Image (cartoon, rainbow, N blue to C red; front, side, top):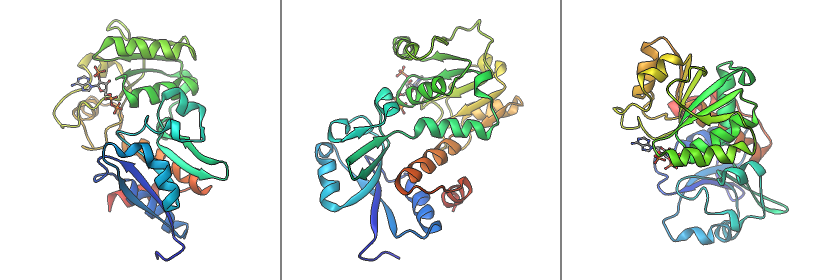
Length: 270
Ligand code: ATR
């Protein structure tokens, strides 16, 4: 029950209307019987420069950050997690005794979703499609997790090359994808292609070569890529496990408590 002592958390972005995070985090607060609430925090353009000031004024305890502000708040924070710095993206804020701290839980969310598929990352090679914000978060996480190899393919090849150059500081096992390459087991779509439920983000050859096909899109639940991959007998995963696991990590940062994926999954589906 909300009362005078309820702590406020929320998701800040524009738009935030269709976010599933309020459902997940309110279910997690209820599960742990915490006197906290999670609300949408719509900030229209121009408002991003005073966000931390507004949070302090309103005694907000923590937040998720989504599009288009994931890279806008760095200067307002007191500390930034090294992984978030590397990918230039923050999705979780917490107010601490030392001020506001920023993290990105997208990468760890993706890696945990991979472990649900029992993938042995160190002995697996990946082909990732896309080199935008989500692609960058996933590519750095895969390199840090010790992936055997990572190939990257993007519509704009210069963006893929730039990401590859940045990753090579970490790992030389990153390269451009070429169609002659057969040496990957997991195909990952990190682009928005497929959200329209009609466009296909990977070609037939890529699907044929993969054993596992992952799409980080969760709406629609089955993108054309996943439909094709399933029909071809591949192991598939959509974006829900990543979404749920990044939320579990944010919740842990705020509360120090674990929440099961099942609680969050149920909250989304009801
Ligand atoms: P996000 O932060 O969600 O990753 P983004 O940074 O805008 O969003 O990146 C979108 C990704 O989807 C990019 O890799 C983009 O390719 P480009 O770098 O060539 O723009 C990719 N993408 C978006 N629409 C696409 C389309 N119609 N065909 C192929 N790739 C597309």
